[in-house]
Length: 344
Image (tube, rainbow, N blue to C red):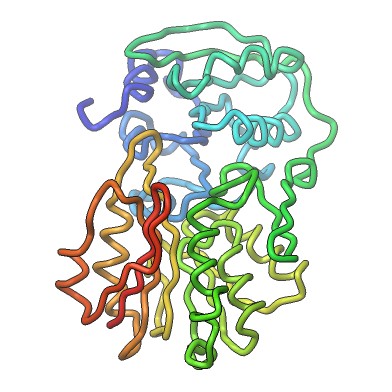
């Protein structure tokens, strides 16, 4: 079990509860947990394209979507839900579930103490009877019995709304920077909005890739600023894709939006790649994503093409940049953020 995280080890330790049961697993699950179940009885659901691809290779029934659907739930004996970092995201997903499943359904909740898993009792006390089954290594496993279902569920109740540069930006739980526009994103955009950057040279950058688009705020702002450019917004998160499409539409702007694990579904080259990548991998700070973008962007940039990226200043990237690019300028340093302009 060395390849499992502590929450999954807790599940395996109580595997007698799951023997010969038809199971749906979703939430922030460990991708290796499938190895400990009969795959013929197992279904999984995620909004993460990278996880979807990895699980699908093992011929396991897995669904990729922004929300749960009835077909994922039907004919399941029980559900295992991995509690995420955000209680708002958990509430969004479980209320979606409570709209779909019948009364007296069984839901097992597992999560880390630091993710506020204990709050499940308070949040869902009207709907789910909960009993603590086990705890170890700062993780808890609960058994829940549904005592009341939800009569309605609507995404609209979870939309956040932010007005930024006269643009309406909506967002949903589980998407980067749910409640407000991230400071790194604002700093990145400020380097385009200042007078020096806002010149004819940028109007010639016809193909622009917003890599890890989140709510789409970067691509949407650039489309507004430089109207004749073609924006391609990509993300690994199915909910991000849904909300980015919506944000282009409500702001009456055109953009190409598609799901992709970094460059996995990209077949063309760009004049400009912009990115404010997350450095958090679940609860750990991890700069792997930034290193991957620096390493792979060169292949997807045209000659003299530019990568403009946000990094945190706790680590230097000059060595990796010099290996692959001809020019590198630090446009802005503020608080914890650094904005890099990198030319192929």
